[in-house]
Length: 304
Image 1 (tube, helix red, strand yellow):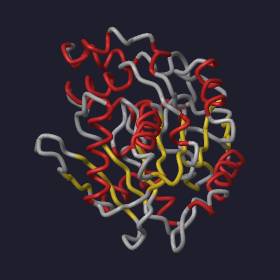
Image 2: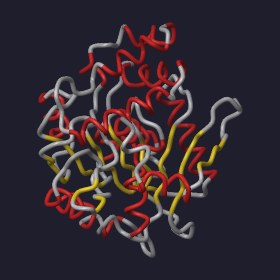
Image 3: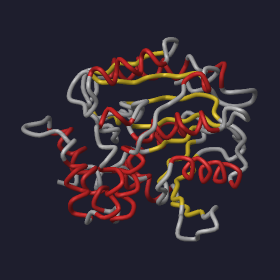
Image 4: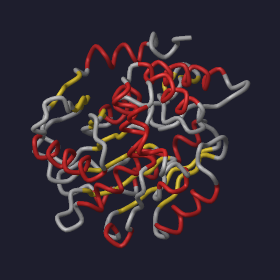
């Protein structure tokens, strides 16, 4: 049941990368939790934003792999924000606190939507070099929950968790995917009522991305071919929104941007989704490699 939590990779990550807690708002209850790994001399790191059910730990494999290649990677867990502009303002303050002028943003599901909104919000004074959007969306109306969004704050934690769990794979799954789901359920259990309610509110309140404001930002879209919480129409809308985006497709992995499993004794750190083949991982790495020109002088590009 806890294969990932007791894995050597996860224990190595927890023992070598310290968890930091940072307050940047006047309200000291708003605490950003993050793992900041890799050379601190790099001023344009890769920042990882989790989905509704995720915490900063869910990207531990990506942190280990990318720092091993010489990158600086920051995996975030955002505090309670009830409004998208409030989130963007808080995230901007966090980047200021970390003395980061520009960043690469990798976002999964809600994390991808927040990354797009932040790039949009800061388009007059750009803070985003590139966006990598995994199983993400551009318009919250696809969930048909705009009326419910105003009542999430009233719901008890067990009901909010039930709503999130409804998106996880049902029925028989590959053992590796089962481990990934167990890990995500464990992470979901660590979130309190306010954290879950605020994330669901951001996920469902009436909002959409204005692509003309971020047309200068390099975009990569990552989708999977098997089970996903997003409809085909939602994915097609993303392609229309970013016609020049690079695309990465994975055969399996579902909607979970989870740590990747070990195969043949070697951990496949690089893939943002669970249970993928080596060939798919290599193709995904090549997407990072084509971002070399966007990383800026003296910064490691997003490449293998």
